[in-house]
Length: 335
Image (tube, rainbow, N blue to C red; front, top):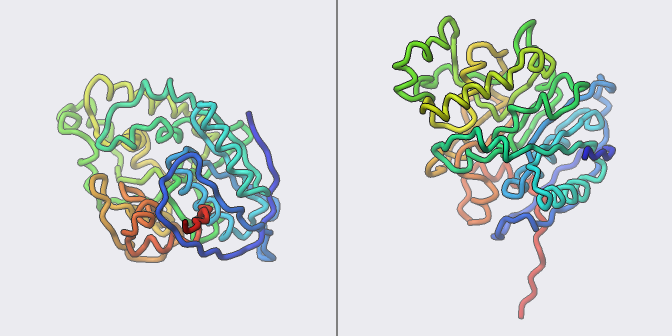
C-alpha cells in the first residue's frame, strides 16, 4: 500500500564511524536530521521524483544514499521518493518501519515488485547478486509508479551524491530520448554480448545505424510518459525471453537495456556517475576516481563500502561514503 509521510529538511553534515557488525534486516539506524529548502531554491514548486529499490541486504547503502541526496539538495522539500521492494510481507514490514524512523519528515511511497514473476525471466549471470529480481525493478518503473509521475531519477542503492540532485533531474532529454545517462564510448561494447550474438546477423543487426556505447543503468533520468507510450518494458522483456532460449549475454540486467537503448539516449556529464568504485565483479579491488569533477559516487562492482569498512579493510574512497552511514551502533558493556 502506498505510504505517505511529509518532508522538511535542514542541511547538516554527518560523520559516523563504522564498526564490524553482521548486516541483516534487524539493523537499527539513527534518525536523520531535518532539512529545509535553501534560500537558493528558485523552483520552489518543481517536484523531483527519485526511484530506488529497498531490501535487507543493501538497506544500509540505501539509507546513506537517501541522506546524501537530502543533504546536498537545494530544495529538499520538493523531493519525492519512490521505493520498490519485493512482495515478501516480512521484508516489507521491516522496511516500512525503518524509513519513517530514520526519515520522519520524508515524503515517500512504497511499491511491491512481483518478484516471483520477474524471477521467471532472469537468466543466471556472472555474479549471483545480479540475479536478484530487484535488480530488474528499473524495467517496471513505468508500471509501478502512478501515471502522474512523468519523469523520474533512478538510482542504485550503492551511490552517494555530493551535488544537488535537482541538476541531474533537469537533464534535457531532447525531443525523442526516453532516458539519459552518462555514456562511455571508450569501453569495448562487444564484450557485453556473447560471440554467438555477434555471429548471428539477425541479432547483431540490432545495433545497425546506432552509435551504441556502454552506459551504466545505476544512474538514469527516465521520461516515464515516453516509456509508457513506447511500451519499452515489453521490448526489454522480449530480449530477456530470448536470453532464456539462447545465451546472448552474461551480465545481469544491463544488456537488455543496451539492446533497447544504446545509441539512443540523451547524454549526461560523467560527473554524475563516478562508477566502478566497488571494483570488478569478481574480486572487488580498490579503484580510483575517473578524471574530472564529481557529483555522484557509485560503488558498482562486488565491493561495497559498508562491508569493507566493517571488515576493517576499506579502500581509500570508502571514507567518502562513511559520513552518510546512519547505522546505529549498539553499546557494548565490558563483562
